[in-house]
Length: 463
Image 1 (cartoon, rainbow, N blue to C red):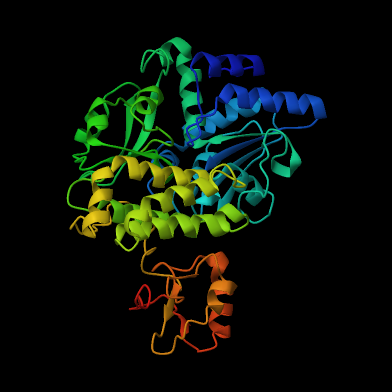
Image 2 (cartoon, rainbow, N blue to C red; image 1 turned 60 degrees about the vertical axis):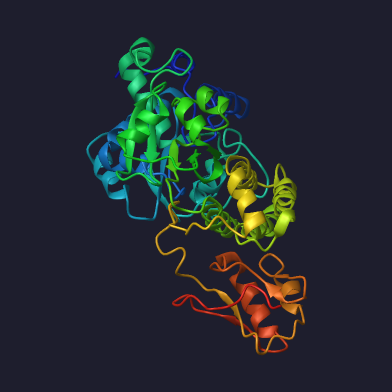
């Protein structure tokens, strides 16, 4: 491949309508232009960052690229770095042991246009957020910054930084080889090229599939022998649900999926399949997302646990007819108010479930459930449901003092009778010290914190 000037790079990205493949879908050309303008304004050097951390449990496309085609990622990063005359290239990978060694071998086989290093991030949901990656590279705690800021203005070491997903750079490398006309021979006029899709859920043959934009969604699901069931989650845990009728009409493109109420997001497709309770599956994920919060802003610390509780009360029937309003109120309280996109994404996931699974919602309100088991179709990190410290109550001792709810309100609330109520999930790491404090200060010595080796047998509330 011949080197591209900065103007040629921007023109190529515009001609192929290259959008970020990490989930937000931001135009790549605009990112490059923002970095150029910031560097010229400040007379500063630039940095290129590849985000291959992939903290979403259901996403595997970047891991496939890291292990099967690492040079494609490096090609795209090199093209951008040459055009920007970047002072450094940084490759962010997760500490799950997948892809890092392959990437190091690929780097040893070639020359890069700028000093290149690999930085390892914790394999957590929020660690894949761009701001969290920049903080981690800068030696800070890898969580989203307390306020929204653009990497193009203040990125690695405070320099203008071009930050994009591993697949985005790979698509750039393919387009640079083929040219805009060759790249556009696949896909649609509005969305040329291909997209990598992580297909899981009910799929008998889960896989990462490269599909031309515009192919029917059902063709991809049929390829993986995946039954739709009551719905398909599009875009991952920050995505949206669509029903079976919408799935039949949908094509693999941002335009088509948005027209049926879905989203392409990071290319994650999770059909539920038959025989599992949709609301119970949603409950599992909302508890997980609440626990993945950085815990640094109110919408995450207090709002997301409220969303998880409201969803759980709908699923188990304890919330009655007010469950839906409680979910809408809790989700509405966090949208647009977080330091990052995590509250918005979690709210979108929960609210979309209410619309798609309307019949199941009615069954849970009117009949205390749909009668289906929970098959754990939606993937959570290995051991997520079995490990980690958990709260438990000795109901023979608890007198309903309520002190625990005041010490750790993010986790414990008082039920209608004044007794503690909390989700039957592991205590988030950022709340563990507060949970221990609540245990130590319990006047009746009723509150316990297990070591996570056994799932405590406890009631949800005392009547």
